[in-house]
Image (cartoon, rainbow, N blue to C red; front, side, top):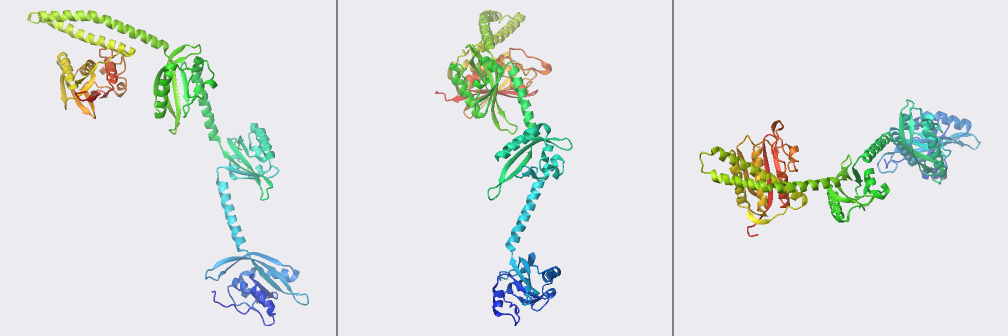
Length: 619
């Protein structure tokens, strides 16, 4: 197309100089003669618009049929009135860059009267201006405005604009939907009619204040729809300015915050309930944030310390702690906080009158509904009287147990003497059986008294250990033989992989083994076998006593090593004993830096195990 030669563009009578101007002009130009619009002169740019057609001396209907529908109005106005007529954004397709690529360009045309020497309009001068960039820009703006409008109308947020007088000039469809009122009713100051009457004066006063100061405007208020539905709105507005810096009003948005307000209300009610419960509770309650600083103390705590809420919170330390307990308390607290683990502490706390009291405190980590760590909450109480009563009880148990040992020892000696005297008397079977029964019961009573004494020693911190190196297998066999003698109806089977030495108190470990064996026999009355194993477990010696008795539920397993706790059998049958044997056994193992535990299933079997560090024989 670029090699095509345009037809002649000038009649022989036309001035050559004028032709040069037409030909070199970058804008499309032509002269049309008579009302038919016959092309008398045309330049190359205009020929491109017409598609390189040969149009000289041809009427417009043939030369430019695409424009013919406008020609009647143009020619009549130019010829009859002598006016210049404008035609905008005419689209013409051509190879405008002469690179073989066809594209569309847009032109604004001016149709001006051509006046001859006699002053009569005898034709029309057509000149065009390339406005492609303007049309493309306006098209893009129109598209963007359409997209913006679509987004605005579809958005859940309401948008609005206010002029320099403070009157609404625009609200989006979201506001119209919320209020149920037509768009026009909100213009000017009409939007205030949708604000709840109790909020209206405050909302407008705040708006007027910020509008006058040209500051950013933020406020929460309620609106009511035509159907009577209440809705919380958060409104934000910012002043807007022209390119010259002139104030033009405000633009802003409104967001529906009804759900947030309801949540805040529920949280506030929940917090008020918590504070009321916490303040009426007869225990101490406190809370700490994620940094470890205290954020709450209830009334019981404040009454006890005699300090105000403000004096107590926002600190990592408590002045009322006894100096001897500070290092222990803060160390345990810091360790638990780092691991986000619960903990229990007993410490002395100074009361408002200066007297130190014993406090028991349990604390647990707090988490948000999303699982985020939010700090700690703890509760405690004054346990001074409880500890005093506990001390009196322990002293009594210790004293009573000690006093009981003397007569029982004497009784046992006489019973053993009588058994020795009558052991060869074949005619005294009843007497010998009676004495054997008495001897067994004395042994059982001795173990109970020993356990009571041990509880007293544990509670007072006087349980001592006389450790030595010995082979645990040998001790295990001795204990099995001793218990087997008293339980002929059960077969106690030992399984051992090798010989293992430990550094421990031989008598105390024997006490643990005997307790586990006697318990296994006691709680499996309908079976006749107890399995015992000893093996190496990663440098620790593990001893396991396996019975096939009544089993222990998961709930009971958590309490089995507690003091005075006893497992119940079928039909709530309660077995004899004080429930302190396993408590003492667990304390003995813990003081040897070992571990003790139970694995069991209700109604089937139980595995009681303990582990001690293994040592070489030479240690």
